[in-house]
Image (cartoon, protein in one colour):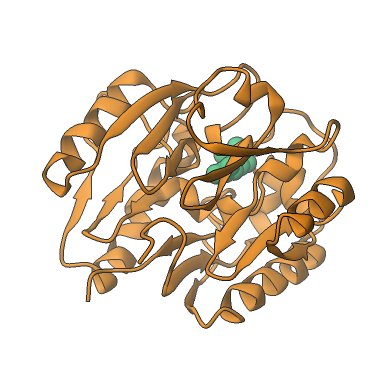
Length: 263
Ligand code: CIR
């Protein structure tokens, strides 16, 4: 049983009207709440189509970016870890996720300061946990994670998120046990040497933030050449509208926590 893309559960959170105040690197206009909600509903449906049990938490108006639940926690089989986001406006989201994690896990741990780490910088593969340092995740945060998962027998490898890229997983996704979808700029760092790699088409770098969820790969809409490559490689692609989340630098992975808790 794969532990890195075979899931029974997901947690999402409804977008809040305060989403218009969400963080963004470049202002390309406010997201449209109704369209965001429609995209979010299609995303949840796509997860449910795989047979997953999907919990959709109520919107949290006090936290404009809280729809991007991936950054608040890391869910492994053995237990869950509450993150310590580098963005000050997002720290309360992590604490707010804890009670939900406790309904699924007996063992919920928490990153202690002084370091910072966000879930978007963490890629779990069959053999290791890669963590990209970024503007949101620092070396102390990686060390804190390493210490917390040591008794669960995970190897944690620190790598670097490319400059000007929000999160490590903005530029990569796990497609199966040993295959990574990634941008050429991230591949050039050598961090995926030893893995089979599929690169996004030039100009379609935003397609790298996909998710493999059981039999499907959820890909943002609007990246036809990357979709074609993945289809030819045998992946069952579901393309989901992402224009509104993209205005806030969000993609497919950010919108869910995906997991298979121990029975
Ligand atoms: C932020 O800047 O934190 C949000 N606007 C976007 C977070 C996207 N999350 C992710 O890539 N995991």
